[in-house]
Length: 297
Length: 239
Image (cartoon, rainbow over all chains, first blue to last red; front, top):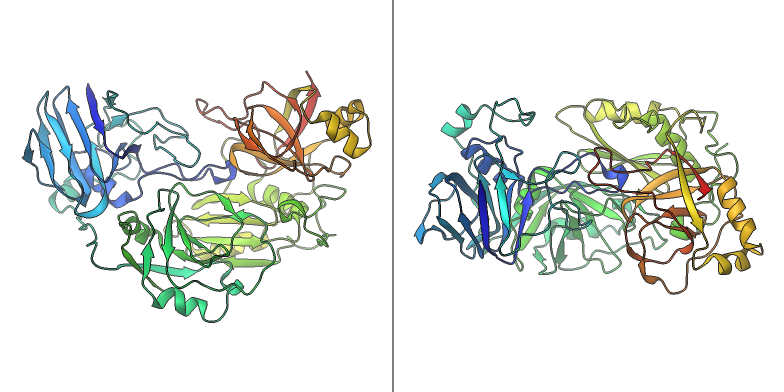
């Protein structure tokens, strides 16, 4: 019951839906950046939605399956081949023993999600197998030659995994597929007011929601860094470190915001002007460097 | 009475002053409830004393592995002068969260709430001599003061398992090192500002190191990985 990592690509991580509720201990929620895509991949192969899968940044991953399996690839869109033949995305596919699965560079979006029937078997910390790139907790990024175990989770097997799982029969008929964002178009994300919106001048909020921001290549699972016309703080005293929520738009003195993503620090000392809606963060997880991002607020 | 902060210092944290947790007599001392998107509130409090008392009041102590929180509350994160509360809007209405936060009473008793943790320390860290000199004490006096003080875990940060500990006096207040070390070993016990703390893992760090413990501050293999949680009472003893 194993998968051999022939080539991990630039960064492939084990992720599930993360570990919420431990920020008071200093732990980020972590989990798939595009949680909706991981959920879908899991549903397609009959897993509970929170089973561990792989988050594949920019393709490049090559896996060899030792045993037969059923897999589904969601999220980013690009050419994914099984023994050299392209397989459809957002559908379950049977994999024969010895088969090789290859991920091309995505043409739309940034991160593929791979679910394997039974889930990826990896150690758990506080109920989750997710890799947290900030604290280094969770499984290490995949390495060449590494073997991944396949678990035995399935919907309704009473393993305790069933929390939040939908009845398979409903979704298998109508899987909710959200296409990966077009890199040539702006991604729109809704924002609500943050706790320190009043630390900025009157023009900053209009500037936040009226311009197209550009995603910086310095972005990662910790934060999406944005480039554009800077926001202006009117208060200059030091802000004592305070708790930071997922999606917080934290603004350092440069005036260029960072959106806190799954592996964000649980506290921070820069003012938060706005917070991105949770459901729109999945799209930000698929934003490519250079992509335009527009905030709706 | 709640003390206001005349001079925020290290980390912008006010002095803990005497009488932790020093609960006020009227209400929770909440200064403001700031919106934080659609699923969180940031509660502003006057100072760190108030944060500790308010956090203990909200969570009903931290001795249990799972805090006694209302359904739908996800995280309660104390910091220097705030408590962040996140919730699932599908499980609890924002107005209910607001009511809960506004009606919470700060916990007054520091001992009956929270877990108690005792940590054995081998004193004699690389900065013990310099710390003693800065404070105008002997090394033995620093150790005696560190071990005889009752420390309160105020908030986490910096790394999983790292907790900022405060006590009822400021006689151990020291500045950070001018040049942070590139590697502080796991288990190093340090002082910085009014805080004491134990490094859960090897990392860079600027705290004055006065000792070492073999206690595991963070053990990811455990169901309850953090040795110290916010709200806990911590005592140091000589190993």
